[in-house]
Structures are given as structure tokens and as C-alpha cells.
Length: 441
Image (tube, rainbow, N blue to C red; front, side, top):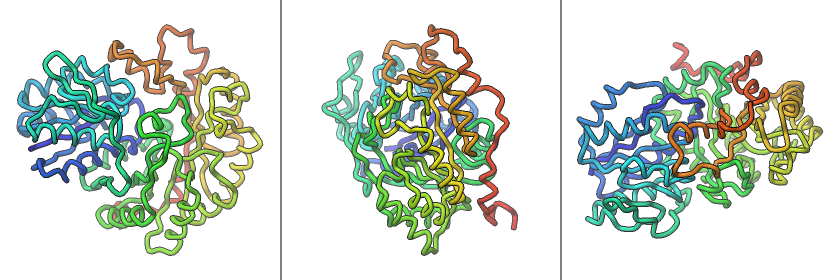
């Protein structure tokens, strides 16, 4: 069986290379299936292609299955891509997987797909459908997957599966269009998550999160129990990737990187011992950091820690789990700890969080900048408000940049935080040496 795993073309409003890693992990997982002869993988969502090239790929590929990755910010080109696929590769079975279909699977029934991954990890969901096709039972009920049978949709037989970390297939770096990722990160005023002017290796180390923020999808899709790669597997993947390509820093893709402090200390010890000792960054919560851990991380090459600060306004704390209710003094302490350790502190702040307003967001921003941290805003977005009957335009507003409900009162200055002029840009790239292979040395 020939399979295409693809992120369809669209114009992104935000870019995080970590969100694209499931594309490559799913492709790698499918290559293990005995029924699969070939898997091609394409990330066409990073301003790197055109519809003629997509048409060539579909027409010439003669794929048995086309698995389309979806996301909150990637519905714009979805209808056109499915139309191209039906027209140019009419014998292909079409299915979709991703964050949006996990949160709002019914939305995708309008596209005439053959299957929708609704729950569980993406890799086993797509694999279940391919194995069902290979067995000659294309309409059988499957774990975590809705299957179309004519005009009727067969619901999942049960919740989708969760893979143990040792069963993950980490991305093959030679398949990833890094030059296009580099361009999306080059302008720090955009406040994307990457570090400009340096090439990033994303290492997916954990899934699931026990914190359970109501505005976050992670625990809904991947569970409240964290699953984490071993330190050995993590270091081995970094070493293997550095041998393959010239990367300049590592980004650890995990919902709460320091949730397991013992694991982090072990990783830091490995970096200090060598031979692999990269510069690196991570994301976590203020609650899961302390002075000693921050110092250890800085000594082991960490150059940026991103924290879900959300707000410093007490009136907004009612919308946050207890672990996220951070007071000003604690944030100041963390900023001082990061400064001493040589780490840039990056604060994720939610604009429009219930109980807060523009004045509160401005106070939070001023304090973040006062302590020397990087301010990174997103718009408060209630993903549970999405419905299957919404139009693609309505769904596209759930991109954490726009106010999702267009009938809501005027933004009252909220948009200035996301789209206003940004004069403060990062200099953290200056702490990261340029790889010889990329500098021309």
C-alpha cells in the first residue's frame, strides 16, 4: 500500500515547528506496518509550495491512502486540497488526523472523507484504518476513528489508543523542510516560538499533562498522565540528528518540560558530561521550577525557558488551575533566577482571559518587560465552543490570534497586544554558536 501523509497548503497565522512533528512521527509509524509498501511525507503548510506542485504530487503518486494532518489554524486550504485529491487521485482513500479533528471531529464530515481520527494518539488511529483496508474491512468500527460507509458514519468502537514512549517513531530530520522553518522564525516581531537566525532541532519528549487548563487541548487529546521518553532515547536522538544535519539548538517539545525534575536533572548531567552538549530551550510552568533547577539547566546549556504565566491579575486566577495562579513576587524571583543562570525567560500571556481586561494585560506586560522577560501573547480561546456545524471561516477564528466569537463586543484594545508594533526583540541567538556547516566555515 502506498501512503501520503501531508499537511495541506495554507497561510499560517502562527508557527511552531513542534506542532508539525506528528506529521513525521505518523509517517515513521506507518512505515513499520507490513501492509505498507511506501510512505511519502510532505509539510505543505509553511509557505513552501503551490497548487501545481500539489497537483503533480497527487496525480503522479497513485496513493492508496492520503492522510491529511489538520490543525486549528489550517482549515483555509482543506476543502481545496480534498477537491484536488478527489479529482487527481480518485482511487485514494482520504482520512484526517490532528488537533482540530480530535476536538471537533464532526466538522470534517462535510468534506466527504473516508475516515476521521477522533481520539487517542494520531499514529495508531491512522494505522488502524490502513490495517482495516488491508484486511478488506474498510467500513469496520475502529478505536478512535470514525469511518464513513456511504452516507452514514460509523462511530469509533472505543476511545483511541495511547502509545508508550518506546513505541514512538521520532522524526526523520532529512524529511523536514528546515529552510522554510528558518524563514518563518527569522522575524522575532512575529512572536513565533523559535529562535531567529539559528536552526532548531525539535525533540518531542513528552505527551499528556496533569494540569488540565480549560483553554488547552493537550490533556483532552493526550491525557492527564504524562508519557515521557527516556533520557537515553532523548540523547541518542539528538546525537543521531546532529550527525545527519547541522542544527544549532534543541527545542524540547513537551507540555510541561520540568514536570519530572529528576528526569531533567539526569538530562542536564548527560549534557554536562558530553559528548553531546547542545544549547536548548523548553516550555513549562512557573510552579514546576525552582532556583536550583534553573541554575542546573542554565549550566547545562539552556538558553530559554518559556512559562505559561497567563496573567498576573488576581481577578483572572479563577480561570486557572491552582498551579497556574502566579503572584508577582514569585515571577520576579524566577526572572532573577533566569538572569543569574544566563537564561532568557519567555512569558506566555493570555489576552482576554475572563476576569481580566486590557488594563490588566498591560500591567502584566509592563512587569514582564520590566524584569527583562520576553512577552508572548495569545488570545483567550474556548476550544470547547467549536461545533460541527460551524463554517471553515468560523473555525479559522479559533487560531488564538482572533477573538473567536465575531459577535463579541469590540476588542477594546486587546488586538494591540497581538498585532501592535513590537519594539523589543530577542537577542538570545547571540548566545548560540553558528554551526560551521551553515556559517560557511
